[in-house]
Image 1 (cartoon, rainbow, N blue to C red):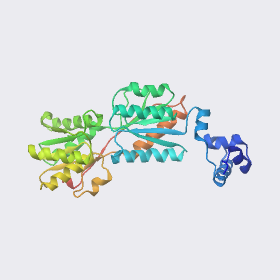
Image 2 (image 1 turned 90 degrees about the vertical axis):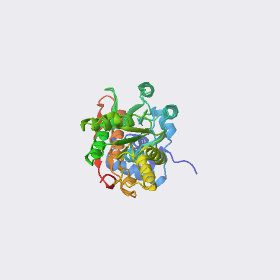
Image 3 (image 1 turned 60 degrees about the vertical axis):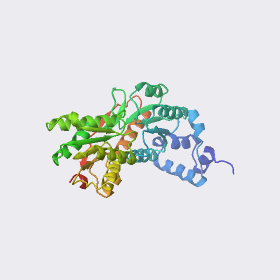
Image 4 (image 1 turned 30 degrees about the vertical axis):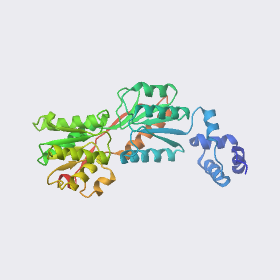
Length: 333
């Protein structure tokens, strides 16, 4: 079967090929009634645009890249949902890359995105080297940081205050009477892990405790399995009165290991997570957690990115910082 062309769609809708092109690329420039007629013709004829050809003509595609550090974490799944909802409304597509916390893998993913001439990139970077992202911008690819603050005025970023989150989490544990607290974290090369630890220490300092007494257990990954291993180490070394975990997956692993060992939560050990993923409320002992606006992070970051792409002369860079919300459940009651 011969491919349907723009000329075929134009003839079917009774408009010029240029009008069809505008509907595909600049729909806001076409009157609603005309746009509906062209869209109906596209659907009736089964027209599929030639993405690579339009990319060559325009110099970019209607595609953006999303690079995250752990797609296995439901936090990033929810972020991606926010991204996808915006781009699908505007006729864009998303190429997803998972760095798994590796800068080498992230660099490879960014090269692929550049080769595909994506319009822009949303990224939760695995490191703090801005030169890597500057290379994208030198090729005309806009970049917005997601779940990571910007340290420069010419860069959009949407993030959550992780220091405040760590402080609120440990202040909650202290309010329940805990005085010996362990912090189970992923690699301390990850900014979020470091800042949540700093917040935890700030809460201890404010309570008149020595922040250096915070027992830090650093795991290689931020998974439930890593949480189980961390819990086994805590049990062997003498249980604290409370455990704060850098994300909910670690906390759910800690919870499983504690219950399996006969440790009662929260009677023997209070437990606090971070992110408030869906599994937190549904666990055997519902998990207290710090809720982050994950869907909004993805949605707002995408809106900023596309505004920068479409309006480079008038776009105003923004640094948006959300505050996390404490959600108290059975694990700290």
